[in-house]
Length: 268
Picture 1: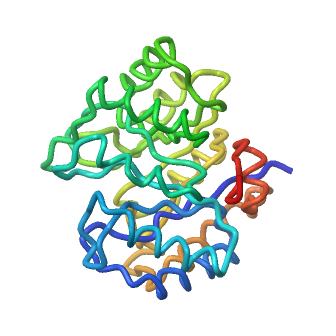
Picture 2: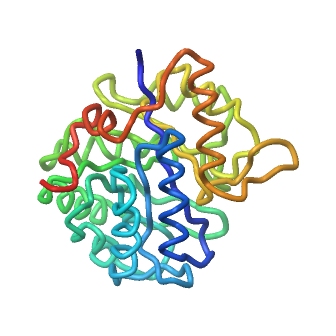
C-alpha cells in the first residue's frame, strides 16, 4: 500500500512558542498520522533568530515523547544572512531541512534567495548528511535547482516541496498544480504546501497525483471546515489522515518516512 508522509509545521509566524505545549501537540499529531515536524529557529516570543538554543529545546521536548522526523527550516523572511539561516543545521538531530529554490514576492515582502545562497545551503546540508526539502514557489525554481545540481554535489533523493497560496506565488488551482508537477524531474520525489488553505480539495488532488509528502499545520493554515479552525495541530492531522485513508492509502509512520526518504535517523 502506498504511504503518504504527513509533514507538520505547527507554529504560525508571529505566535509565541511554549516548548512543552508544542511537544504535547506534536506527540498527539504523530499518533494521528504525522511523520515529520518542521520548525523554524525562533525565540519563545515567536520571532526568528540565529540562536538555535530554543529550537533545540523544542525538538528535545518533542523527542522525549515521539520519534518524529526532525526537519529544520533555513528560511523565513528576516534580516538574517544565509550563514545565520543555516545555523539550525548544527543541531545534530536534524534529518531534513528546507532549502529555498529562489527569490520571490512572499506576501508584501521580498523573499531573497540568491544563487549564492542556494549553493551555500545545498552544500551545508550535503556536508552534514541532511536531506534538503527544496521549497519552490514557481516553476522557474525547479530550473534553478537543476543548475545547482550540475555545479556541486547534491543529496539524493531529490525532494521538492511545491508551495502554493502565497501572495506573489503559485496559486492552488488544478491547472497550476498540473503545470508545476509536470516540470518536476521524473526521478525526484515531491510534495505540497497549501498556504492559507481554506479547503481540502487541493490536498486531495495532490495526493491523487502522487505527492509523497503533504504539509499541514498552523504555519500554513488552521482550517478544519467552513467557519471552523482547529484549536490544536493534531486536529488538522487527524482530518488529513482520514482523507488519505478514504483514498485507499495510509499515512507513513516516522520510520516509514525515513525509509522512503533514506534519512539518517536521530542517532546517526
